[in-house]
Length: 300
Image (cartoon, rainbow, N blue to C red):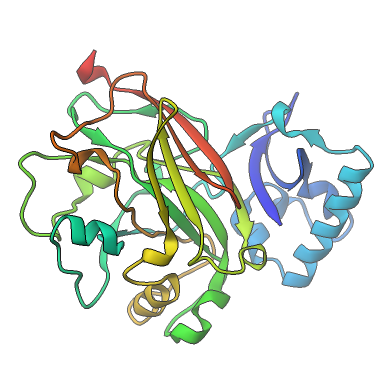
């Protein structure tokens, strides 16, 4: 099932919707008579519903869409699938090709950083780069959304904790010369407002049979910059969840963004950074495309 957060025509109320082809059916219509309206407007609350109820909502959504009772995808405004994740954890140097290219030896454990809830914007929202930042880079990544409370989860059962997958542009401010140590990713580079466009939807885990076999693409102004497979991760999604839950309780709606690979601007010779009015697209066939324009006042 594809889930979205959106604004529908003639309404200022945010709704969770089920995407069926090019139709969006608000889950409120699919849950009428069975639950109060709260899960209809909050993705995390919807994910907390029993699987049986969510499956019933999906079936009802397909029936309503087939009857022409949904909204056209082109008529709604898509928002970030999870607006305020309780935790937003990122991975650095988690692709073998990038490590090899930069002569970085992967660590024995994942390299972690955090992004903030104020970094999160929607799949087509503008990225507003602060005046204090003049070098900014794109990073196409697969986002993982947690669907249940989990602690000390073994790797073999880790993917059972995943509600679904989305796309993330892990926008990063860059510093030249680059610090030599790989663990130099800090909050002021990663946690900036609007630096985490996500979406366009959350594809539930049952529809992504193998999250380690997806192809991610990145384009800047229509020119392809990145194409890589999630099979090249240093630490798989299951390994990361197992590692994290030995230390941190993960909760419904928490997000993990899983790293990027070759093609980012900082590693080009000379480096190439984004410019004012550039448009960056991140795509995966199974999930869709996010497309965000950049406003970079320092470069005007």
